[in-house]
Amino acid sequence: MFGTIEIGKSHKTADFTVTKKNGFYVYKRDKKTVELVAKKLELEIRPMMPTGLPEELTTLFLVKYNELVLGASEKTIIFLKIPIEVGVFFKGELIDRFGFVREDFELYGPVDGGRVVRAVNSNILENPDAHKDQKSAIIPLRIKNFSRKNMKSSQVLIDSNFLEIYYDKKRVATEMVKLDIRDAVSKVRYLNKAHFKGMTKITASKQTLKREEITDMRWDK
Amino acid sequence: MIDFAGIMSSQVVINILKGILTFFIGIIIVKRLESLFERAFRKKMPKGMAKSVSRLTYYIMIFILALISLDAAGFKIESLLLAGGVLGIAVGFASQTTVSNLISGLFLYIDRPFDIGDSVEMGKVSGIVQDITPLSTRVRTWEGPIVRIPNESVFNSEIKNFKKVAVRRFSYTIGIGYGSDVDKAMKIIKDVIKEEPFILTKPGPTVYLANLADSALEISVKAWTPENKNFSVKISVLQKLYSALTKAKIEIPFPKMDVYLKK
Image 1: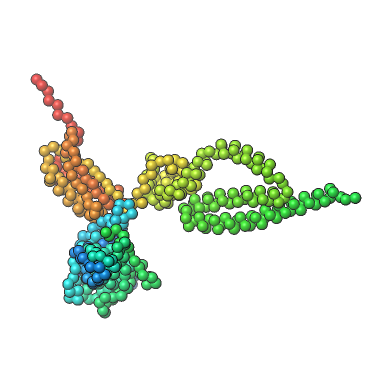
Image 2: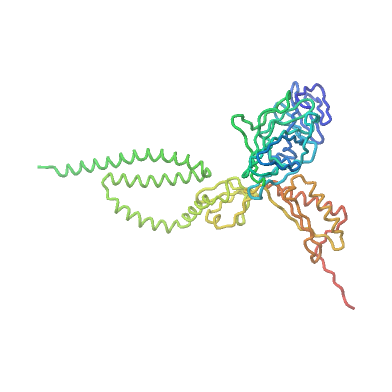
């Protein structure tokens, strides 16, 4: 499903079709039509985080999972499963984006000062290695309680700008995300390393690798 | 014989030259300082205001420089300052409004109720802030024209800034006819709202029977959207609500009065 596809005279997938007509290519999906001019058409299909439909109003998404209670200084790794979107790129430019589930917006924080985020409900995967699905992504999440008391965790706020995505023929996954639960403000950090081996990497748009990117969860109380 | 007149005149010439030299060296320093100030102000203020404030600083520095140069040239600046003071009072009275606008502009800068690009409503004007200068604020209204509002009026008016918040609520009161199925109408309204992707799920929308009014059962609908989607969602949902309610044959009445005549 993902990767670069060379288009001959026509190409058909379960989601879109491309046909050559009058010297240019016509990309069609539902009501969307894009006419592309190229001698030899190559389209790149990439998995994307669920923040762009119907419009990219935010790059933040809040993944919700069953509540965990972490004892003082305890840590764990869980694997979240979230729906993804698919981006169709022509010469590096996004020409279409589509998804498979309805996504909702919600407010994270108070009306004055809060942020609009995507709300994504997730299951915790018990056996991520056996997971085979290209319409969802696995987020390896390491949660650590830095507090001296028990702390609850039921959601993680992720900025798609900093999140690297990996894919292979069977599945899509992201880099490992670290959630540091603290008494004051919990922090989300991005590990910049593939968790599963042998996958193709898509570099995050704002990932600089020069400094560690951090997302604050200041209203997570 | 000593030539006092000659000495005096040469001293005067020297003093004048000293004054001129002081002024020219001062001008170079002042110009340099002005650009430094402008750069520093630009980091903290809107572009227009930074330029104006640095210009104002420049004129104040020029005034001080002129006094220093006159002093160096041997003029008695006390009398000049006295005359300047009298002139200042006269100019002050004449430019009361300008000064008031200037001070309001300064307070607006300190208070920062809005920035350039914010969508605001102040008094009767609503639109997007285009520029903030020491004397006035320019707002591009939703109809297109740019309105210049004196800062004094801006400072004294009630300002609603929609950009300072990420979300905004809209509300309707929808009247349905007496005898209509309220539960059915509320379900239709909730379904229409649920279909709209830009309506936030948290804080969630509220739909309730708000009032038994004279001519209708009034249902209150309140929903939150991202700030920049509020108007478009509000109008599109209202149209969908009307279509859905009329399709379900739920009466949306207009004010009416039943009159019974006694025989």
